[in-house]
Every structure is written in C-alpha cells, then in structure tokens.
Image (cartoon, rainbow, N blue to C red):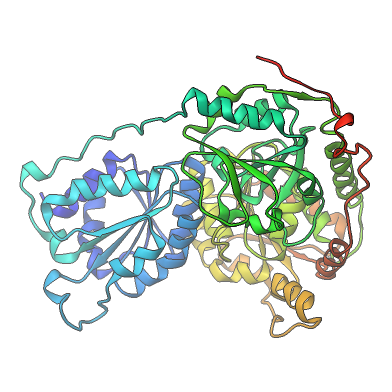
Length: 565
C-alpha cells in the first residue's frame, strides 16, 4: 500500500467528508488515492477559497474542515484562510504537497520551507518525513485542531514519501478517543457564586466559546436564574436569542454604542467563552476598574485591561449548570430593558424606509424578513459587517457567521459553499461588499458545478467603505478607497448563476424571497447609501446612553436575596 493510500485511510478514519483544494504535481499520488475514497474532493478555483470553505465548514460542524494545496504558490495561497480559521477558533486541517526530501537542502524549483511558514498561523504542524508516522501525524493533526480552543493544523506530505510503499504494520489508522471533560472543584464554584452574589450590577459577556460548547441553552438559563443582562460578541450572535428580554445586543463596534452603556455601569463582567481576539478588553474596560469572572474551556489570556477576580476552567455547559441561581436582583434589568427598547425602536424605524440607494439598515431588515430563524447568514468583512453585527437579529447559534478574529475579506462566497455543504437543508445568504465580492467571486463556478443554491447580496457603494469610515473619523478626509465595478448581473450570468440589480427599495424583499425559494445561485446587486456609515459615527460620538432612572449605584435601590435552586 502506498503512503498516499494510508493517508486517505487515516482521513476516512477521521470522518472527513470533503476536501477542498486544487491538485498539483506534488500531490498527484494523494489525489489518485482519493479516487476510490468515499471522501469527496471539491476542486476550487483558488486555494484561498478552499481554505475559507474548510474554515466555515469546521465552524458549523465542529469537525475539522480539510483543505489541500500543492507546494510553493499553492501553499502560500492557503495562508489567509488558514490564519482566519486559527484566530477565529475554527477547526481546520491543511495538507500541502512538497518537493522530495532529497531537494530540501538546496535551492530548488518552487521549494520553500512551508512548515516554518505555517508555524505562526497554526496550533501545530509537521512534515511527514517517514512512512511509519503517517497514522500518528494525521490523528494528532485532527485531535489538536478540534481540541478546545480549536484552530488550524498543517500536514506536509513530500512527493517521494507519498509514493513510497508502506508495510502493513504502519498502515492502520489510530482509533479516535474522546476528549476528557474537566470541571472545577466545588469550592471554586462556591467562590464564583459568592462573587456573583456580591455584585451590584453584573453583566454577562458571551463569546464564541459558548456556541462551540453548545452551551447556549445553559447560558440563557443561567442568565434567567440570576436576572443578569447578556451582551454577545460579533461571533456569538445567536448564543442568546436577540429577542430575549435579557439580551442587550452585540458588542464590538469601535465606538460607544448602546450596549457599552450597560457595560460601563457593571461592577462585574462574567466573561463566558470569550476570546480576546473577538473584542479587546481595552474597549469595554478602559479604566481597568471592573472585576472579571472568567468561565471558559481554557485559562484566560493575560491582558492588563482584564482584571480576573476568579476563573472557572472546564466544560462550559457543566459549569453553568453547577452555578445555577445565586441571587435575584429586583429591577436589576430595568436599565437593560430601556436600552433594549431604544435598540429595537432604532431598528424598527428603518422597516419602511424607501430611500434609494438603500440604507444598510433597511437591507439588513429585509434579509432578516426573508430568512427563517434557523437559516444561515454569512457576512464578509467590510462596512456591511459592522451593520450586520449591530442590526441583524439572530435567534439561534451559528446562524450569523462573522469572521471577527482574523476578519479577512473574501470569506463570504467560499463560506457559503462550506455552509451549504455542512447544512444542506438550510437556506444560506452571503452578504458581501463589492470589494470583498471580487476577491473570491470565482468560486461561483465551484458552487454552480456542485449544484448548490444560495443567495449573494452585494452592498454596492464602489468603495472600501469601512476604510473610508476610519479615514474620515481620523483625518476628516479619505484616500484611495474608491473604485469602479463590473456589471454584476452579467458577471453572475457568465457563471450560469442568476443576477438582478435592485432599482428601488421595495424591490429587494420580493427578490430575496424569490431567490431563496429557487434552486439556483442568485447574485443581488444592491446600491447602498455609504453616507450612513459616517452618520452612525457622528451619532455614536455623542453620548448615546439614556439617563439611568434605576440609580443602580444607590444600594438602597437594590433588594438582593440569596436563594438555592
């Protein structure tokens, strides 16, 4: 049996369904071994697209997505998507071909040290330099990629190793073992309860780790039992339903949005499944005066703006169950309800907006209206991402996918392909700016070839809007952000997809509903009013916080009583 055959056997053992990538000369043996495998190889049009597909597939399934490239330029093209998965905590295994071992000591055609290149953007990586280590390397790559906190790993398979014959004793995959679950000691739980009980104004900060741990139900129950408001990060949208009374919306804008009004009053932040890459503590604790209770699968990262009063490390679901209800604070969420009402009123004020080009708020509300609660919205990176994070209500976990760790443009269309393969029964919308769209729009051909159906909505403002936003805020002027676009309708049709350009605000929702009900790929070009970005910035530069009629800093206002449940 060839080494490449053993590699495929090991991948099958890991439950791999899809490999996304591009064949090359140095991975031809592995490609040939895949011919008889139940694993489906998805040929993409660029390696970056392959990595993004594996990234989103891994994020939605919890199983490592797999991408494949050849050596040299094929490997370098994977880098952005692999780095995105690693910082976004999505399990991914990248496999690259390589020149033969005999060429690695000298300058050689297309050869570069790929293993060292991938080291900073992966949790672990290795070269298969010997045929007898294949089962170990593959098992380790998947185990590390899928272990909390998940991320990317990388395997390099040199072409001469791939061709080699492997003795039977080295050809057996290593059985998969479950990850052990850990739980804090009882005294640690009791200490956390006391910390929560003593807080006058606790706020929960829910991160993407809540969704990875499938702990959304436990999060909501814990919040209800203790009457504590919940803010979620961009990547944790849906961890608590947006319409839940204790949800105070999404945190993450680089400005003093409504949700920070609540957090600014908090004396205890309960950070659950929160990663620093999602939103810096310097933004929500600038004065370093808030105590922080960390509940996570791994010890927290060190940050001078996050003063950890106590830390519970282990299975997030079990920890939340163990904490139960430690207190009732009468009227404790009154200010949160005030903020929630303001947020909902702002959102509702755009429902019937008829201006054109369309306001981003109206586009987002139409997307929400056209989709079921369980359907999936994939957001690319750009100004529209900030509007989606702020305005799009998510009711279930993993129904609004935003990259906000690495935050790479170009993820939406490949991400939609990964999402559709991971969750074929759900409808998928890829929301992208015109800048991000053209970074990986060639993958429309991949989607069409696979027979997939999803909708791409282009927020078209002929500029890199979020960069202009930042430039205007900093300098009062913009530089080098404008460009021209092709005819997106004809462009979509050239791939065999459907295309439509919206010409009035009342056209979008019907077009969206029709596109989602079809069995085809649709590209909907929507002219967007970019001036709304700067209008929002000016609004947030003012003090948006409403008066606090609950006088939360006055102890007499609070009636706190312990309870056991």
